[in-house]
Amino acid sequence: MLASLREDVADRGGLDRTCSAPTATAPAPSEPLPAIWNMITKGVFYEDLGGDFHPRRNPDKTKQRALDQLKQMGYEVTLSPTQSAVAG
Image 1: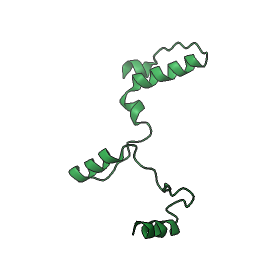
Image 2: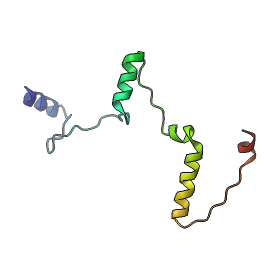
Image 3: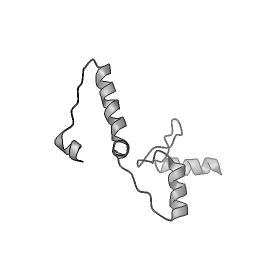
Image 4: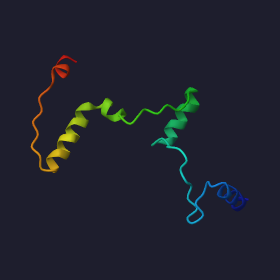
């Protein structure tokens, strides 16, 4: 039965015949099981947090990572806050 199911899916273009690996048709969440669990238990649809979720969540860590990357490339960086950063 599994073999016939694979053939049906492969005929529709869902599997790559050379390695039988599923091909992605849409982006998937990075942690599918917690996302599925939350959708089932809370009765909500999946909501993508966005590509800037981690920088918004921890801006200091994002800033330090960028500084470290610039230092590794050989730059010396000095930062000073803007007026909007001081006020906010």
